[in-house]
Image (cartoon, rainbow, N blue to C red; front, side):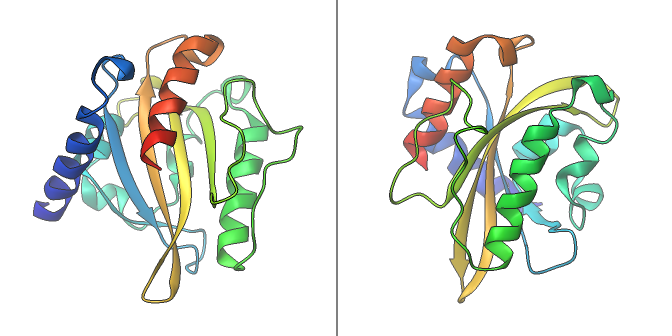
Amino acid sequence: AEQADSLQEAIDKVFGIAGDNLKGLQFSLTLADPRLPQCPLIGCSTGFKTLCGYEMDEIVGRNCRFLVDPVPKDMVSSQVRSVAHRFCDAVRNSMDFRMSDDDQEPWMPGARVSDDGVFCAQMNARKDGSLFENMFYMRRVELDEKPYIIGLQTGLPSGSLTNTGVVSSASWALQACA
């Protein structure tokens, strides 16, 4: 819990710099291990616990699908699920990942040469069953010569997935710190 608090303090410090551009969004961080079956989370900041309503022992060891599976199927983007899955596979297999033009949404920042990451937005469900729009950025990192995936996420205001301006602002903030 102490490490999760320290991690959240660092996230808050970084995103506090951008001020009004973040429109009051709160950010959190997760770490996943793509070498393990189903790419489970192996750590997260306290902000992620707040975002989804689960405790650390209910998060660690699980794939992020646990936030999507309870969402009504007609509210889940199969395209986003596919992109996230392909990204995790690419990291696991030490391959480069680039989104296809078909997967690119208008709000997403363009590809950057130095980037091994992907932006996504998906409807998620909290532990209490309430739904929230989650924007997340996943990026490959190497620690001790082993691949991991860092996820930086924020809950968007309700209705944001259909509001390009809000989603673009949030993706700008994630890109600025990526």
